[in-house]
Length: 115
Length: 111
Image (cartoon, rainbow over all chains, first blue to last red; front, side, top):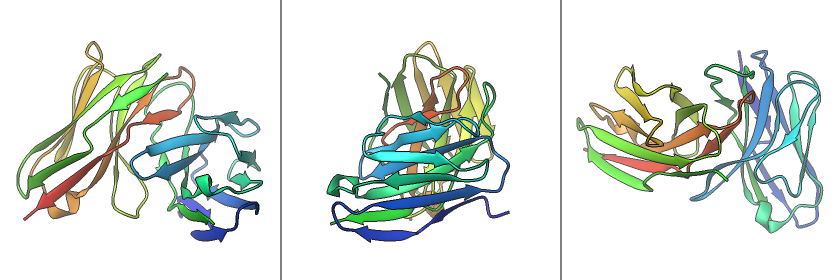
């Protein structure tokens, strides 16, 4: 099993350009998440999808959109990139649901620079 | 709102024991988790506490006191490979598995 995969691994954009970050998981998980990680800021939740067909805003959703394409795939789109969106983006997945551990499994990350 | 406080950096020597503390203020509480992240890598799960007390997993243990809104991660018999950042994270929403992460503690283990 590959776990959680993300593409691309690295990306450089110019201000105003758009791009989509792709994420897929092969663990049959219900819930998926997008985080950004900036130096000294920890992981901040951008959007999440509790189950296929649903998406909700997290702590820092402005400037982003998401699509839960199917149970496996959850993409993050930057419509008009800004330098403030320079960050490392992590996708994660978990079994989801109301109870239990719900360990989150993370992908390797996408390192995005916006010039 | 939610806030989690943990020290920014901790140093220790190989073979020692180190404790990383985490205090939290959240509107709801359904569990405290710990994640490890090596430089340039992805976070990986270490432990989870939903009830008060100590959970032990090999060299790592995690403790929770819900009345004090406090937890800690205890690392024993430190090894060089334990040098990493450690994040506490709170599950604060009933029915959802979303986490709010602290800013992380960088652990530096020296020979």
